Image (cartoon, rainbow, N blue to C red):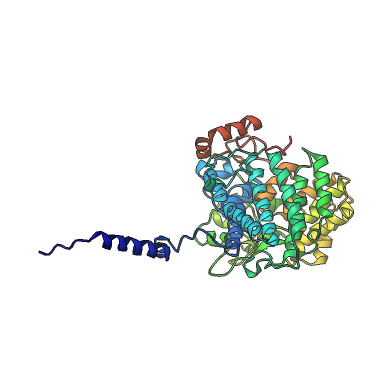
Length: 479
């Protein structure tokens, strides 16, 4: 047997060659090409937008929680959430979905935009973050924000910002975004699934979203609300002025299909709420056949399902499904609509703020905008507005009329409808007949795992807020 031995010089030469090989990049073979550590912003914006839509406007949120409690929708099968039986696992999924999903992507977009001196990218990130964090805080109250999404820096127990602090930061972020956008400079082109790279529209979105958040404080901090509202309206680029300005995500056939369409391929658990259907019928609203399909049993009648009913309380064929306009394979979802902005301005004018028009004119424009996007004629809208129960001049409580019609126009935008019902109290919604709580929920409870892993921060937030159960109220939600 021959035994080969390496002499010291040979060993030294091998070490030199090995070191040289490492320096020439052979260690790159240990890197996983399917798990990149650095991704350009143009690859992050798509998942940031679609992830935001899934978390804030998906089936779980719109049909099973926020939109359900706003009584736009009802559960005809497995009605736990309709009876206010909320699963902690679902709360945890919502929480994790936001903080480990779109918020991480958005934070990276902002950081990369700053590092690469791309102010338009930074602005897009700030606007998307404000939209998401606004919803998160509206649902949970005090939440991690300034210390959130910092796990890579070793912060796994972020403190909670008060909701007042959250809103203060969001106002500043949206103002900064509107001011830093340069429409003459490139956005992100076709990978921008909301505006296709049109930065002028992003600027309008920033100001319009600021209007929404400002009005949210109308009862708790009316001075701040008015100041922020009027500043947003006068901000660079202005607010939504037409249907083409509104922020929406259009889904695609086959590849990235509408989530409600996808859900109905295998499920049949939801119907339109009787509360909404009965209101539309009573006011002769031409949006009824858009919002709802006729019942299957006769193909003519529109019958909603009563919220809070147990399984089997009505045959599936005798309650109206959600209209095809909202559940088609390519049906869009809306981050913010033009009609909402007009309703916000109508309410502001009625409160005596500078809204750029009279309350009556803005209210009528809002109703018309809501109808025109569905192809409803001007004549039909005029006939609707002439009815005494819909007419602004005839209304005794004009804020109630604005709030109620805004609730109708927000159909499909569950989180916003839920938030505005809590803020305004319009319409007067009542719990269903077989619910387990005395009142409709007004907030989300913190998930148990967060309480366990970030106990000190959660305890501090609970001590500040008091009741953080489903029956509690967030800071801006005044009795």
